[in-house]
Length: 404
Image (cartoon, rainbow, N blue to C red):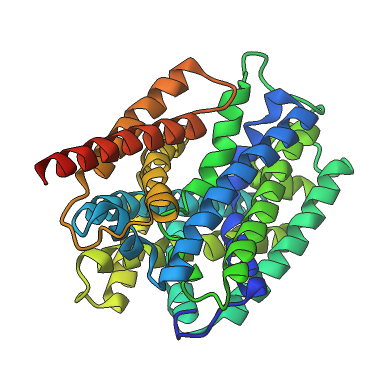
């Protein structure tokens, strides 16, 4: 990947499956429990279908142009306009690094407390943060086989956990237990399913640019993330409905698979979070290409670790919606410019119509959230952004024609 080795469909499948196999996905899937099993699964699959299509189409741009994601975004927003996307991406990736470390450390602490009477949240945050940094260095030097092996092992272990949960081994309380006050609308559920693939939109081309074909770029990315992320969401949903809890540590303890469970917790965090760290580094290099990559890997890992010690996890859902509100409209402009207008604006300073359209799209994202539409907020805000951008470009074209 990073040593100029081309990636085939299987390698990209493993890469994005690894990104999807995480505690965050299980936790988010657990939020679907008020909808019941069938409706929950249908909305998980529908949302992931939309999100993964957008993800894979964006990755196709990176493959065709042979440019990392946020360099490619210059084609839509201009050189300095792309820095705005880079800055937003760096913030969300450091945020994800912190969230993943928090979830991992909490789970390890809960398991070790029960098994050995030892807790140490801060210590586990630092240890796993260090492991993530090392993993980034290893994969950056061409250790893709190690990451692929870890992903395959994780998938097998998660299948084992799901099987035991459905079989009743992980029963924490009566099946279907959930607060009577807890509700989730169809639109909100669809949005939470779409938004997870969207978090990877600004970085997918960092990896698909190394694909050996357009087919590998699209289908490797799509199938890897769709299958693994949907599976993790459904695991979280099923865990709540069958055990009364989506807390992976609680389930692992009731399943009596301590060592294997700890392996799932740590590996799932590492195979996802290293992508966050590496891509934050790539985004910074988009702005300041002369900074040492090695130094940036250490700094981003350290910063994510530090924030993990203080981040308020009750803001997790708001964090997800903030990501969707920024990247859905922005990449509506990127996709429209590339596939419809077939324009390359990378030589301009700012693509003002594109930036204004994205800002309007972000504002309307929250408006659509308040309306709580069955279609969610992502699709309507992207469609509106596209319409606004088409109008802006038409007006600009007419004015230029009149000047001539």
